[in-house]
Amino acid sequence: MRRNRNIINIIISAITALFGYRLNKFLIAIIGIVIGYNLGTEILPAYITDSNTVFALSIVIALLLGLISFRLYLVGIFLLCFFTAYNFFGTVEIGQTQTYIIGAIIGAIAGFLGMSFQKPIIIIATSLFGSFLFIETVSSLLNLQSNSLITVASIVLTVVTAIFQFKSSSEN
Image (cartoon, rainbow, N blue to C red; front, top):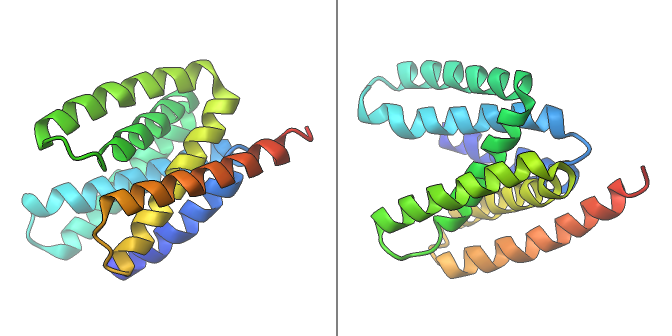
């Protein structure tokens, strides 16, 4: 199940990092699905021991969050920006409780900014989200444990994919 998740994460993250703005409404739904599925597979095993039930409930959570994200577009933008900032800040090692609190504050600020300045924020957030997920998944597959390497690689890939998105969307 983890291998399938890694393959799906790599595909979605590459598409998101490169074409996030052009596909934003579709990707908002997909990102809602990915966030819902990942939340389900991370949280539910603490309460449910049957892996088939965890998988089925994770799919239900994923579909519900995807539908909510698509139907309530600004909520989807908020969630995208919130989880992008929150997850990116999670690579900073300052203590577990402080990381959660500061990550949530930064995530909320990013979410509200995303709703206010949609195009540049969507490009930056999809580049960051896609790049971070891509690097995180690849590093997991390669069993790399360096948070600083993951952070630097995510930033470099984010800059490259954001430039690509700004250049390809400025034609319109």
